[in-house]
Amino acid sequence: MTKVPAITATFWVIKVLSTTIGETFADYLAVNVGLGPLITDAVMLSVLAIALAIQLRTSKYTPWIYWLCVVLVSIVGTQITDFFTDTLGVSLYLSTVVFAVVLAAVFVVWYRQEGTLAITSIDTRRREGFYWGAILTTFALGTAAGDLATEALSLGFRNGALTFSGLILVIWIARRFGAAQVLTFWIAYVLTRPLGASLGDLLTQSKEFGGLALGASTTSLLFFAVILVLVGREQALANRHGVAVKGGEPIGGRTRDYAWAVAGIVAVAVAGWALQTGQSSNPETPDVAAGGGTSSAGATAEQPRPTTRLGNLTSFAAITGDLETKVAQNDLAGGQARAKDLEVSWDDAEAGLKPRDPADWRTLDGEIDAVLTSLRSSSPSRSQCAVDLKTLHATLDEFDGV
Image 1 (cartoon, rainbow, N blue to C red):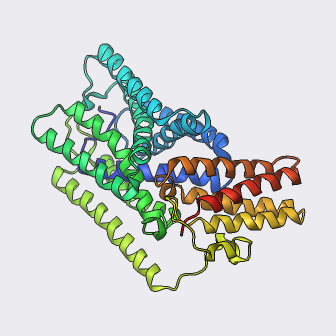
Image 2 (image 1 turned 90 degrees about the horizontal axis):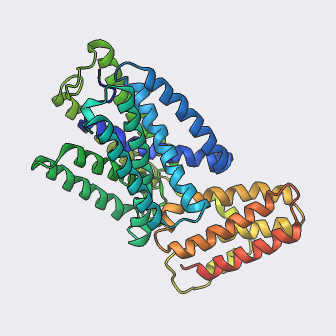
């Protein structure tokens, strides 16, 4: 019995949506919950190991555990790339090449051992091991290549969504004209990772950055609901009818599969439009991250500045000003609490800010990390916190553009 689903329209819809869920959930644990990248990585690796153990022990394709593994692999694959680029400082050019070579090596060993790379032949534990190894590498490669395209070409998430959608369309046309199934599948699989991330950023980022401002939580719940319905349907059909042996046909028929895939896309589009319309009809409330505009950045925001590629940074300067006030008053506990607002707001804005000027963004990111580290030290130094905050505030003022 085959251990993976047929490659259908529903398959690709769930794959793209699960990519966004995976990335958003990892960020939520690391930043909002406060676990940090190391603990989050350890937790996700442990959960993935358990899920894969269950998947490998099954005797046939079981939708709920298969797609749980895909979501978890998307998280871990993204974390691997982030570890290389953010923690070790490896350039995206190098990491993209390295992951491409690793993926090629997986395919070479897989083919030499099994004599086939056909997706419909994943029916032994060893072939499934190669399959999941390739899946994990594609997520790492997709993350690196997507970030490279976003930064090097400054695509942004709107252009990124259009670009990666267009590339997938080209791959689909190539397949229709006789291109190899295995080759086109894996290229498309890599491209769906940056596509899912771009679509997720388009929905979650603020309108200032060109997004729809639905928020990460709302977008994740929306995507999760659609995934739950589509996977639930597959699971119900699998329980009722079983899975065809290497048939390659979707459970329930291809026509119904197209209908459900389109319904999932329409549900996301309509719900997104309705949520955005509801937000637009309500008066906007002041940004909680700006701290009510009472900091020393208030006067700065009113002064004309030369436009920079990063755009308006006054909300971050406002939080920094609040932190400076708390440190000056020796309220380090209050500073630690307020620093959470800086961390969350900066992380939320990454997808909108980073493509505008990756170099300046990395400078600020490093200085914000320094502030967070000094404030969260087991024995925080008031003087060191003040120095780090002064440096950050000066850089924010320098890079700010309105």
